[in-house]
Image (cartoon, rainbow, N blue to C red; front, side, top):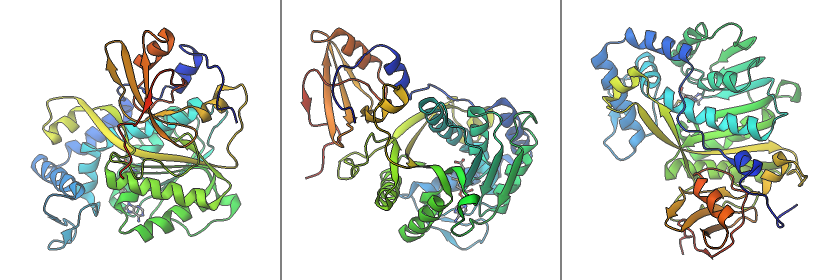
Length: 389
Ligand SMILES: C[S@@+](CC[C@H](N)C(=O)[O-])C[C@H]1O[C@@H](n2cnc3c(N)ncnc32)[C@H](O)[C@@H]1O
């Protein structure tokens, strides 16, 4: 595997490694469909339901009461999506979760130009957010199966299917309430995704069994996404470790290696951020003045098979490029970039204008989350993600 040698900068590599994509807006037809569903809801109730979901997710604030079973407390992270909660989720959260899923699927499509998932399984699909994103990234998708325990979420998903123009819509779409147990190879899906759902499962042991099951359903690529909190980042790191232990699997993103995650003992945690455009209904329910939302997230993408060895192709070379772990610190005359390297280390790299103008220019343009095809020319020191000793 290539780990040293000259790297061309300011060119195709830098563009290829860029994950940053600015603000993401939902497809207009989905936004219109959600707006129609939200319009039917009682506005006061909707606001109340949104606050209850936010409360349940916050973990710190007092526990809320379930709307489905009055009198039953909702423990943090445990939300039952009845009809009202499903509409509240659509109105308040789906534009931002869409933005994150769209970013990650685009990273897959950009770095693997030959990869076209003919079948997608989406666990905890909610209103089928991953379907909307996947259809934008890979038009002419053929098969999608959404799994969600909430019948009301699935009703929303079905209502919104009609809004997708027929020429864009996958030919075979179905929804199920439960994930089938371990599956046979012919039943596997090329791409399995679970977004913002692992942290809603009741315990680590249920998460472990679910990840194992999701992997058994995967013929090629598994994408796990969750919130950008320390807890959710830990759940994603645990899932990655569990999958790597199985063997015959490699990490595609975000870490550029299959070593233990060097950030698990750090003061900060591995997460990224995606900007989404808030539609009017989201601004209303959140009483937000800005139409911009930055959603923090953690994720891992693993693929079956050995880690590709370096060939002079960007899609393979990029497997060895460092990942930018924090927003670069841009100072006068120098830029500080915290990265995770292919060797499995977290490092702080400093690029100075006086030392190498091109590397300095590239570093100034680097974004949080990018793969960054440069090597430190000047100092290496402890990163902003210091290990806790
Ligand atoms: C936060 S929503 C995320 C929806 C969608 N994936 C997105 O990112 O927009 C989590 C979803 O997971 C579903 N869920 C929670 N536990 C589940 C389980 N054990 N099996 C299937 N779905 C589950 C919930 O009903 C909810 O629709």
